[in-house]
Amino acid sequence: MKNKIIFITIFAPFFNCTYCQTSCPKMFIESKYKIENSLKMSCDLSQEFTVIGMNKEALIEEDKNLEGEDLNFSYPKFLISKDTNLRIENALTYTYNALKNNNIVLLNECHNVPQDRLFFYTLLDSLQHYGFKSIFLETLGYVPNDSVYAQNNSIEDWGYYTHENVFHQVSHKLKNRNYKLYSYEVTYPRKIDTLRNNNKLYFINNAEANWIPIEADSLLLKNFFSTNDNIQREAEQALNIYEKIIKNKIKKAFIYCGYTHNFKSSTFMGGMLQHLMKEKIYSIDQMCLREHSDIKYENLLYTKYATVTYPFIITDKHNNTIHTIRYTNYITDTLFDVSIAFPRSIYINNRPTWLELNGDRKRYKLNTLMDVSANTDYLITIYDIEHDFKKNKDKTLEDIPVDVFQVIGSGKDYDAILTPNKKYRFIAFKDGKIITDKIIDTNE
Image 1 (cartoon, rainbow, N blue to C red):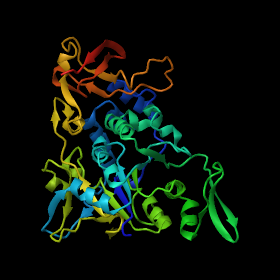
Image 2: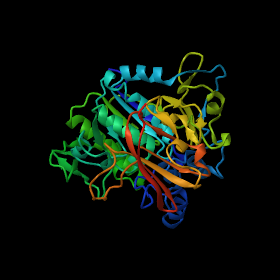
Image 3: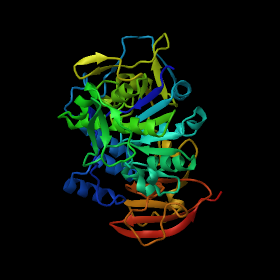
Image 4: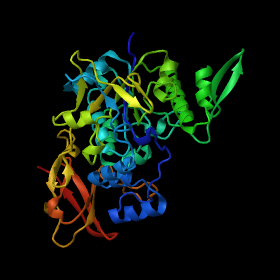
């Protein structure tokens, strides 16, 4: 069978991802405290801003990583094409066809860019239709049997990124659609080791009695014991995914990763998983063609075609997808198979329309929910009473709002974005103190 594994990729500057995320001690605080904590604790301010709905500011912070780079050569302008007769195609239509013809899909994201999660959110409506019931998430902490990610477990147990608005909605949809979730991130101290048996070397896991030994070869051994920590990580991720696929007899699985983990070269997770599976992997990138805070940082092809209103891919006159990139010191078209793009964000009352999640949520003017005349510059947090706001006194896990945003200036210029016909607890903070705390509803 051809093309049994699909990957969808997202890129980061310098092609690196910090998997031990540094975050501020309290997630939902006003922006001035986010900035203070960032200076004190070296928090990633772009991540911290996304958590409180400051998406424009988060893009600016993210793009600061590109300052001083040779933007004519390096990221993000590395997707290239010599063809002049290019066209665009709907990315959803293209991906549905890929899902139909492949057995394992991996979608990547830039963890600091919530827009990258929109495609995943949309695909969750159709994955089961194409036979995908098992989903691997990089953002989950590794659990041998993945019991913590079961249908009846709290989303707060799923890690840092569930605090961000779009990923929180993704998490709810994962639970509501009854997907089986699997983790695969590395563990410390490392549990995987090697064992020789009958003149063959195998990877084993000292902490898992039911781990199925995986035969080792020169490529896997070289990468697993590399002096480069990033390559070690890629190898362990690939081994964890492969182990769970064979142990759970998974025929079709969707793997959602970050940055360049889906690259099909020998030192990245995608390439090593392909090597283990002995199957061709189909890889889809989501980061070459994406919005930035300034067009000077954007891929030139994105700038040219990002005028449409739907996610798109770019093809040549023969309908072949554009996937050639200039990567470090060489040009290649083997790292992934297609790059998808979202149109530019549209903001209404300081909130992006993509937060409406294809009509699943609606806008409610902030000045109809609270008196906005008395204060400026404050934080709004809104909790789903039924599902997200805990009634117990144990606050070891912070409650996650269904909507949260920093008001800069007057509240009359902001909308809350919520699900209709529900009750919520609405809390506003100013200078660290609650100025409004009440129950609201969105009955229509």
